Length: 197
Image (cartoon, rainbow, N blue to C red; front, top):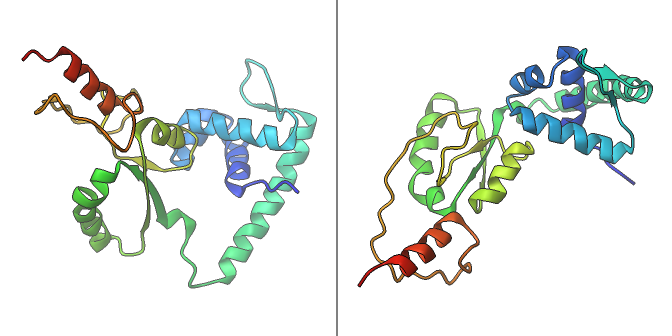
């Protein structure tokens, strides 16, 4: 049995109602590539194209029209069920944050505590990992926010601070991940091989 996540259906409805992937992304608070990826995933799960290719904006196929009508009904039922639990945390008050493990303990606690003081209803779900996989998760809509270090400025970054990288010791070695698994281990390997005695 295939289960279709309701966020994919919400993305479909937003794209159709706003007649634009970009406007749907702004409405949903995600990036345009994330909307494209969610529509592609939905089409894979259903096994059919939902949109016709044309220069006149978003046009549904006949099957897309049927999927849209049922999506609206399903989302309406979903929202009705969620509304039955008055004490249930609203999904729009949950922020999924991706970050490297060093930020989880050192940087984020104080920032999130200050934010929660002003917005006590907001909950955070923290995911920790390496930059490239988390960037993919951001573009796929699996996380809402990425706080991380990057060797170059990402083109879709909302806020970015540039700092000079200083290598303190060229004999650094990682036991947790082999060199080449992340930007920083590659930088360490490069610094170690080009360092002069």
